[in-house]
Image (cartoon, rainbow, N blue to C red):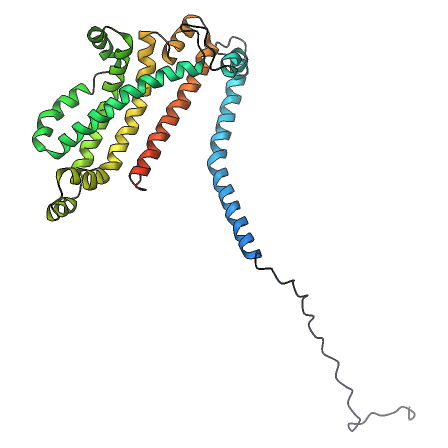
Length: 307
């Protein structure tokens, strides 16, 4: 035991353990001057792609689901309506050759739609001019409101096709009669919405026009029309939709080239697939007309919400 060395308090202390130094991360390469703009462009592109997908995917999924249900339901025994696959097969000639012309009423779907659109253009244009003019008159002058508003409220409740016999008796021809039906159908919402827009012009606008002494024409273009534009284009959108509805119904009765008579003739010939195709085209054209009027309204109203 005595051979063991005794460590006294005066022994030299052991050296401290070395401290571990943190390892610095490797330096990343310096981004070039164009990296930030490229990243920003990619971010904007992804945002636009996401927004487009959010708008497009839901209706596409809904349409695909409806077509699947239609296909399954119409493929059952005893089904009276053709499935979508059969509609495409039966009407492939009409789809692939929209501009054929064999004379008379035997023409492609493009000519049928163009004939209907031509009638709508004439009748709707007349309705726009007359409707805005009467709407401004009724909205601007109280005496015109009291005198004409009861008449408008009564006449606008008459169904469009009820005017067709009167038009045929007056014009003695189917084409101007159809144009008249379009006009009488579209004019009422244009008159009413224009009158409401004129009457809702703020009094401050009217007072400013008096102070700066605007002429009647200047007041109409600089004060009245910009202030009432959202109301006017709401009426125009309703009117164009009603016009397209009216022409299809009127053409079923007057005959001739037009999508309405095409549908009626297909029904008489038991061509159900042709009717389905025509209904699809009618819906797409109606949607395009509504979008066109809505876009024009936004341009005229300079960003004001037109609904």
